[in-house]
Image (tube, rainbow, N blue to C red; front, side, top):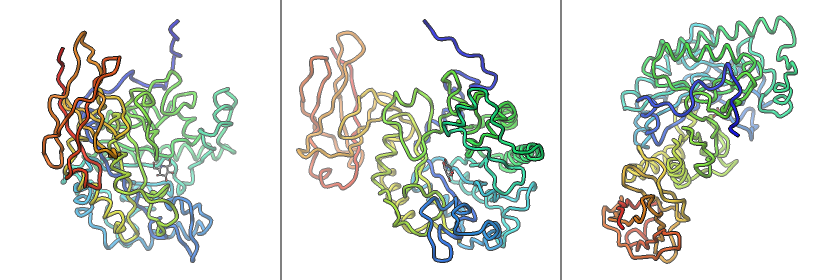
Length: 473
Ligand code: FHN
């Protein structure tokens, strides 16, 4: 028996993927850059000789700095080293095709001169509009810009958290219809109305001021007060889309009326792509449920903003990140690497070198990433495969000890036909790959052994073999 959908007022507005050109373009990015930058970059996780182990962009809550001290940091924000054009060049060289920038993180500090608050870049010694500089510079380099916007805003008197809808007890209470009221007083409830108007104004302001942007990237929408306003948020989303045709918004903006985030009560994706993958990747296509998605990834374990001490956790290597770029694209997602510049506007040397290494690899192998999707090959131990038209890209992350790469090619869906590899070539050397018959299994899959030559054996990095399949009988 087919389960009937629950009628929802504020669930998904579409079943299945967006099919327009804007979203098709989004799907083909492959690689993006995230930048977390704000006044938290000044302390960089340290204050009066003490270091927070926790995420540096949450420093206001670290207990190492008083709220008052933190809220006055902006008076020192003067990133004299900031060069938007250079940042955009670095992103371009890394191979990023979109960029997400924190216009406002949870502390509420605005990197643009918002007219709705004084807590902005305009009132720092730097004065200039950082969002504008970045939007212009990245757009100039052909990199699409998305604006990160935190719903949580600790600087606004009307902002109330009311708890996290992700916590099991709150979610249960909410879903059972028990009145979980996020507001302790009526005055608080009234002030929250002001906060909603303020949030709405700021979002329209961003769309007005930076019309080139392609989308808004929301965060902090797990707050119960926001979730409680699902209907209002839904309308706001529709208004934003009306104002900015093609606007792309992920699943972190709103919930349905039952407090479900990302997927509504019927299992449909809310808004344009799944934003659940933060510091983790789906393991297979089944897990993605066929949704569009991107994954945002930190280089240390969980530091988004600048933290002075990068010895606290493991730091991902360029090859860790390249492996993840390929994994994401092989599962139809985009991969986004986060950077956290310091208080002067400089990227730390480790980030510069990672961007260079990733860029070096991308410049040779980006054909395996841009515009590709999951391939018809099943996941194999040597790495991941992506596909574009009839070409399949095998990205080898685990080189076999015997230098014979066993590739399993599936059975064709056409009766009595099988797939054979028509030709194969290394993307880095452009040389033809030597292929040997590797046998068949009883299900009709064909195996090939690709003989890895000396020059590729010597490589100390992932490599790509581009193969073309042909159906024969
Ligand atoms: O709390 C934030 C965190 O600081 C960071 O901005 C990430 C990026 O996705 N989002 C939140 C945690 O989910």
